Length: 355
Picture 1 (spheres, rainbow, N blue to C red):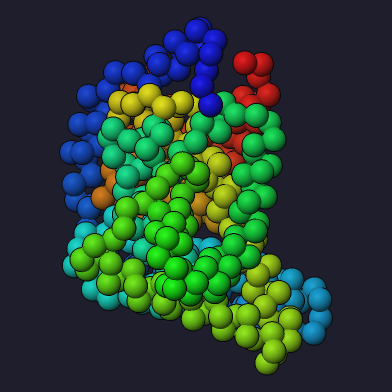
Picture 2: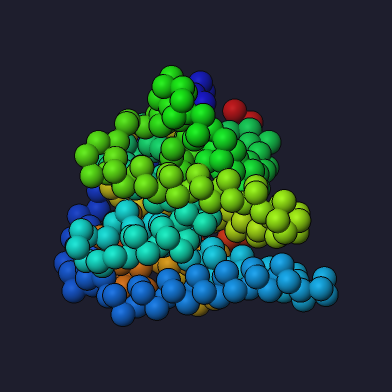
């Protein structure tokens, strides 16, 4: 979308060009140096417990005969698997060698069974953090949602609810076909191999070690998708439908979180680091609910854009240190919001404004 109103266009350019606040950037770098190490004693138990609870609760939902009990199991499964799936974000930022075996284990117990193997995010998300890409047409994870039509927000959520259907088709049908049809394979790699929200984004073909990692992860997800479809003949429809309902609910929650991760007010202009921070969102304590709908450090999304290498378990401490150190006039304080609903309302009102 392009803003044709010269006043609105000028305002947008001014937001994108907000000068960098050197005091904030310096404090963020200097005050958090001791928080940059990923702690395996936190990562591993968190991931394994989340996956175990999630898959166990899903089994309970499938086996339960009482409808209310099945719903309770399904809710627990959705929240636990959502937390486990959110570690895909950490995989893109963990330093090489910091957590040996963690990527493989995550793919084996979460990524492949949910048909979101890490190759679909690794190499993609990092472009969202590129200084010259954020908020532009080259950013795979950005759309000017606040400047689009009112119907765009419901559509944004509806698409997420259909994710399990799309993933089964992508890995169970299109992947095998693409191995036989080279032009289709090129299209699959470019257009159907990224967890992105920008429909114009196109991926380059993988190379080297990443290509080999991509290959085994895609093969695993393809076999799992085929097994899901085949399970109907062995166990009936209930296991598949319960799996898809939980997967769909999990993806909708993540899409709602994505909706409030930024203000989505940029329309293609390159942005300063401070402007990127102010277009992003922290939802810090004392609110407790964000820990559920924005788990694994995602409640500190604005801070994460300042410090992408800080592991999720240290972001809360980094935030507290910055809040205590930076004066009241620092733009850091303007990146903090009380919860999801006010942010959704803000974006919704923006889409309804006359342009």
